[in-house]
Amino acid sequence: MNEKKSKERKTKRVVVNNQARQVIYNVIQFFELEKASRGYSYPVEAVIERASAATGFSISTVRRIKKEGNVAKSTRTEIGAMKKPRKPRTVIVLDSSEQNTLLDIIHSMYREQKEEPSLNKILAAAKEQMNFKGCRETLRKILKNHLRYEFKSPKKHLFSNLEKKKKKQVDAHKNDARHCYESVTTQLQTL
View 1 (tube, rainbow, N blue to C red):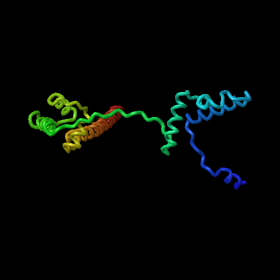
View 2 (cartoon, rainbow, N blue to C red):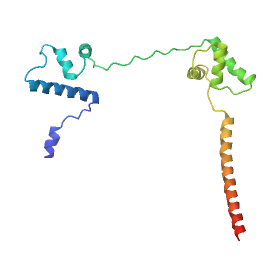
View 3 (cartoon, rainbow, N blue to C red):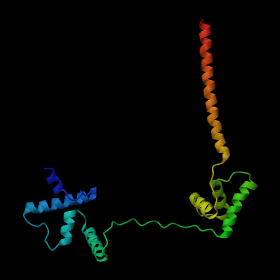
View 4 (cartoon, one colour):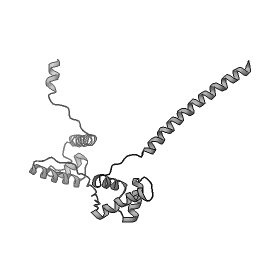
C-alpha cells in the first residue's frame, strides 16, 4: 500500500500563489461553461478572445503577455513580471573647494562657537553658507565616505545617562529607607 503512494507522487508539489489560483479557477469555469453548453463560447480561431474569457484578463493584457512570451521564446528566457521603474537618484558631488568649505564649517563650530557639531547643525550651516541641496543622510554619507569622518556619540551624553541611572538607584534606596523609617516610627508610637 505504501509503495503505491510513493509511486503515485514522484514530482514535488508546486506552490501556486493566489493570483495564479484565481486564473486556474477562471479557466476551469470557462471550460465547464463550454461543456454545459456543448459547444464553444468563442470560435476556435479567436485565440486571444478565448484566452481572455478563460483567464478573466482583458484582451489587451492577453495580447501583451503573448508578445512577451514570443520574445522570451525567441531569446530563450522566461516571461517576467513587469517591474516598477526606479526613481533615479540625484547624486550630489562636492568639488574640493566645497569640501574645504564643509570642513571649515565643522572646524568653526569647534573653534568659534565652542560646541559639538551635530549633523543637523552642520546641515543648517551648509545650507546657509554654501547653498547645500542635499538632505541629512546625504550629508552624513559625504562626511563618512568622502571626508572620512567617524560619528561617535559625545561622552558627556554617555556620562549623563549613567549619572541619571545612578541617581534613580539612589532615590529608590532613599525611598526604601524613608519607608522603613516611617513604618518603624508608627510602630513605636502605637506601643
